[in-house]
Image 1: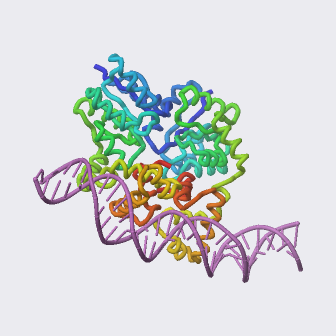
Image 2: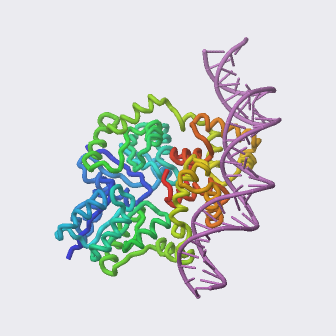
Image 3: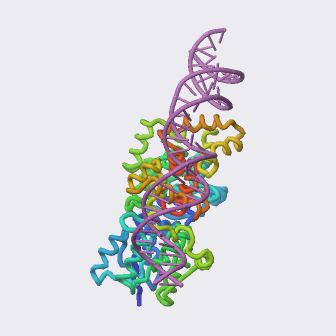
Length: 212
Length: 212
DNA sequence: TTAAATAAGGGGGTTTTTCCTGATGCTTTA
DNA sequence: TAAAGCATCAGGAAAAACCCCCTTATTTAA
């Protein structure tokens, strides 16, 4: 019995290449390729197009891997998502797993490991490398820290702080007193252990709160 | 006659997958794969390992695509480098071409275009997509602006400015007077049209002078 | 071989940021 | 219902950042 696989990746060359690898595995067969999450969801409207496994990239235009995975968990829970990405930061991996991915592979895995991961996922329902396991354990210790505990208004402020605006200007835009803005800043410095605005900017970019 | 190809990419799965695609082309054969520029250069010490074409990723640890390409231009000019990357920003593409790459492919090209590019490179010596051609034209108009006209010392300063250090601390590290550091800053603000340090940080990240 | 560009440094003043402590009112909750 | 939590705002001081205008060598280039 062959398991069916769909590859979702906005880089066509890569999805074709990865598809080629999967085809080479006896137990697996590529059904089709998608350029983004929306294409996949559209395709799944036809029950004939429902695969056993989706090999999903994380960064995609239109509908990214996280949103797409969450959608699949709700509407096609029988489809197993295996994330495959060059993103290595903890926050992204956690988001993906929380969205329902059964495993997370860095793109620097070897061919054999891809095959093993695919097999594990169809047979046991999940596959996690040591790296990912460590991140999971860590995330429990630091319990939902950093990004996840930031409030909406704070995130909005951070995004403005990543521009050339002064705090006074940010206050005007957010319709708050400059002193309130300074309060936000002070709380964030304390909470995130930062010394100054430059640190905040770097933090925001690292944690994808702001994208340059 | 078959042309020999070497794939250099730190993501093993990708280099294997791309290698698989290349193998499928009648006219081309994969000699071996490398995980970074250093591995490639080491391998080339043996004349038997010199390929016709190198398919080179840009972002790699140890020795990146730009440095590696520059080294090949000097030491193995007969080897044709075809860049293959997800990086799409003008500065990177220009650096790569200036380093001696014969073409630059985005990773979202189709299989057929990869084959065409490979053929063009061995037959005509170069292959450029419309996108890349446009960037080249543009770069002539804006003649070497921005990043390229920054001096070594300025770049070093910018990288420090992207941390939480104060200017005084940066001055100590760079063994310069704080006033000189302020001079660097003022010149950069003027040259790059910025208002404050935050702007400088964002500029640095956008232009890959600093990577968070 | 002058002139221009570059690199390093400085004086002094203004603005912004940073760091305190504390106050008000509103909502949640024990 | 009293306490606790939270968002909002304030005053003031000190530090850092920003801005302009300037000097002195050294190197480069016309």
